[in-house]
Image 1 (cartoon, helix red, strand yellow):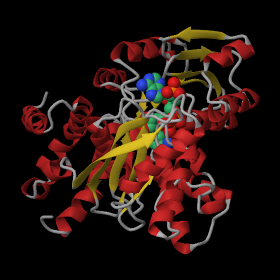
Image 2: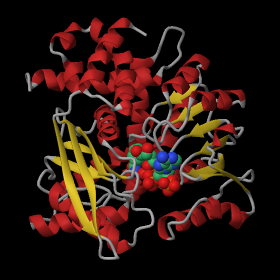
Image 3: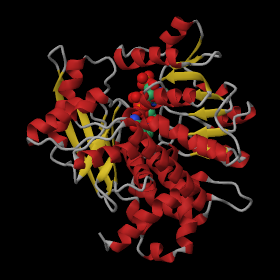
Amino acid sequence: MDPRVEQFMAKIKVKNPAEPEFHQAVMEVSESLIPFIEENPRYKFAKILERIAEPERIIIFRVPWMNDKGEVEVNRGFRIEMNSAIGPYKGGLRFHPTVNLGILKFLAFEQVFKNSLTTLPMGGGKGGSDFDPKGKSDNEVMRFCQSFMTELCKHIGPNTDVPAGDIGVGGREIGYMFGQYKRIRNEFTGVLTGKGIEWGGSLIRPEATGYGNVYFAEEMLKTRGESLKGKTAVVSGSGNVAQFTVQKLNQLGAKVLTLSDSAGFVYDPAGIDDEKLAYVMELKNIRRGRISEYAENFGVEYFEGQRPWNIKCDAAFPSATENEVQKEDALALIKNGCKLVSEGANMPSSPGAIEVYLRERILYGPGKAANAGGVAVSGLEMTQNSMRLPWSREEVDTRLHTIMQNIHQTCVKYGTENGGYVNYIKGANIGGFVKVADAMMAQGIV
Ligand code: NDP
């Protein structure tokens, strides 16, 4: 490891103990940025990297609520307001039992670079709770969301901090939180994105992360004179991001072989076509069932407790959670002929897996670039809310497509190495950094 990175990381680890995901995210970024900062010493003297790795503010709060049995439950709520140099804090809320401070700090840190890459005026933030919506009734989810927002509403606002969804937070949860915010603050504003279409939401927002990831993959393939048509793909997860990744892959003529959830994956060699995808959407979004039911329903194989990276494919779209692709998984993908990995999830590949992708020179789109379509359309939702004017599906989709093409261009600009290989991770880190760093420099030591 570069000794300058090692030195920087030693300080980060002392200051942020027991937060391995945060360390991982900062290390990956500093490996690209420290050499760049050495070449651009103005950032070094202003200690921009040190400042960018320190959240502007962290809010931690108690979330008490009552379950259907009349018992009191207590969860912990968080909001990390990471960086507001280029716009209001913006980033999702995650409800999952694994949520802790370090995970949210890693997500907020990534979000700063991602939001900058979209070119829209959004700072970075992230939040959530260790609440598990799985197995809870609608009423329990509503009571939890109302309690969560009763505290969070003191800290957010359309010009301050605009949360959205993430794992465990979809349209239902955003609705309950928006209702409570409106009730307490007595104002109808664009304080959350991912809203329902009847009450201030944007068309294409549910689709945006998955569609955007596939647009990004298509751009990467174009650099090698190829396209997704006729390619086989493995997708992990079966939530929001995974579902719309499958939909767009089908539209572009690829064949999707797998979907997963935290219990295992299904392998459908005939392909998960639109009809089967409709079944998955009903299963996951309405019945809130398990992906194993897909295997029973369509008579295909289910692999309990496993991830889909051993299945032969041309392209992989990790779309479930962090560190879901380890080094041995990356080696299996490459061995089976996979030429592209494009990340719908945030930091799904471990450092060992990334090392393999870069060594093998495959097309590798890191999450902060490839999955930026979600927050990009959230930014477009904020614009429409400010104008009080909704755009058509086509208009939003066209803008999303253009944004993803521009992010790809930025990665190529900053990430092309001697010999022509595009290191998208380096491109995304430097491309995302420059705008935030320049804004921080202009705003003084704050
Ligand atoms: P959802 O809650 O809709 O779906 C999450 C999916 O991932 C589910 O299938 C879930 O399975 C699976 N999953 C969650 N945790 C784990 C785990 N620890 N191990 C294995 N599988 C797991 O979330 P999203 O689709 O919104 O988010 C997926 C990823 O995409 C996350 O990394 C998120 O940060 C990222 N992302 C999301 C954006 C968005 O717009 N929603 C934007 C950018 C990135 P199960 O149901 O069994 O828990």
